[in-house]
Image 1 (cartoon, one colour):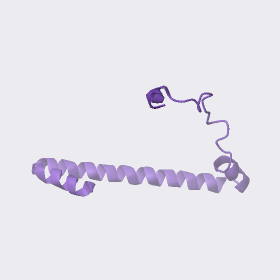
Image 2: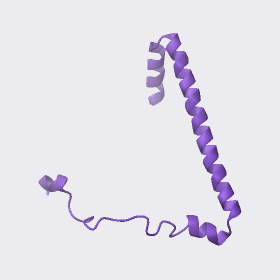
Image 3: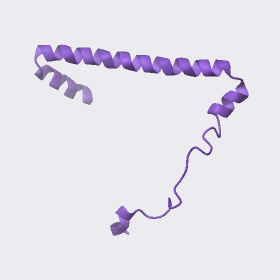
Image 4: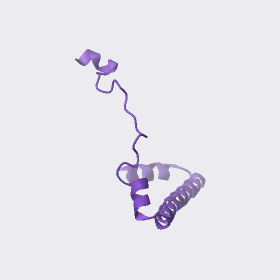
Length: 85
């Protein structure tokens, strides 16, 4: 659904700007591939350097304990929705 709109707008641009769009797309692809590759590489290194117990403790069940907090008034109705109640 997005591709036809992109192509339509791209065709409306002058050729010099189309070249800029191409360069930007190539930049985005390179950036995406680099970040995805770096993240995967780092994760593989971390897992290879740790024992199974360390990996479970670091990434598994309970690894985010005490890092996520919930507000005391979480169950209270929101002020924005008072008119609907």
